[in-house]
Amino acid sequence: MSIDFYGELRRLLEQIPPGRVTTPRLLAEALGDARAVRAVLEALKREEFQWARDLVDAEAENPYGDFESSKPLESLRRLQMELSSKVVEFDDFEEAELLGGVDVAYGDDMAYAVCVVLDSSLQVVEVSEAVVEVSFPYIPGYLAFREAPAVEEAVRGVSALDVLMVNGHGLAHPRRCGLATHVGVELDIPTIGIAARRLVGREGEPKNGWIPLIHGGRIIGAVLKRDGGRVYVSIGHRISLPTAVELSLKTLRNRLPEPVRYAHRLASRLKRRLSPDET
DNA sequence: GCGACAG
DNA sequence: ATCTTGTCGC
Image (cartoon, rainbow, N blue to C red; front, side):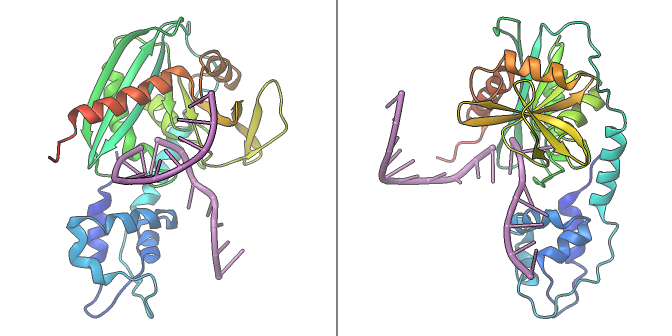
């Protein structure tokens, strides 16, 4: 389930009375979350919204904000809370020999996803690709509604895999439902969230080789330091944090664990290979 | 009030 | 994430 983001935005713009103007923030709030302001701004640059160019002005004097809206982003938040309630936070798998990694690259309105499977010696044993049209923008906290469709299709393409590393957070999310958790619960497979940057949480006191990421009074993930950079690891689904950290450290050769790093490179290549040439 | 903000 | 020139470092 998702929502027609651009369609909802269009419906709001059509409500603006003749002569009136609104602000990006009021539109984002009408959509259900002020954090979608950037996404609204980006959407307005699209060809399909040029007709409404002059209807939005951040500095508007008396902006129109009396929108009739179902606030679609609110229902997406409810869905996330529902999914997060199903997360299994202990190791629920036989072995962790085949490690999967998945990532997505973007080009225009297309998502190029790649799921790679590595064996215990980090050798590639299988690769699965998926190209899907994307119709949902990037909004902090709602990444899964943009990426999950492509990610899930790529993952469904592999024949075997024990644990999947997803490029994005798992429980280290405001509603404990980042991309890794979203995908893990929907596909019912063990997943780990691997992210290069923080979404929520603060760093606690270093423990056993890792730094706890704290949010809402609990440990939601681990911060691993590697050289100058750091990587954020969190439970996605059907795995414990200690094991998620263990597998991450075991495959950490660079800034990101190998499965995710490899998937990232393959997704980038897939995009360059299939994206339409201009010249 | 201003800023934060996975990919 | 993507766009995108020149520039710094191994």
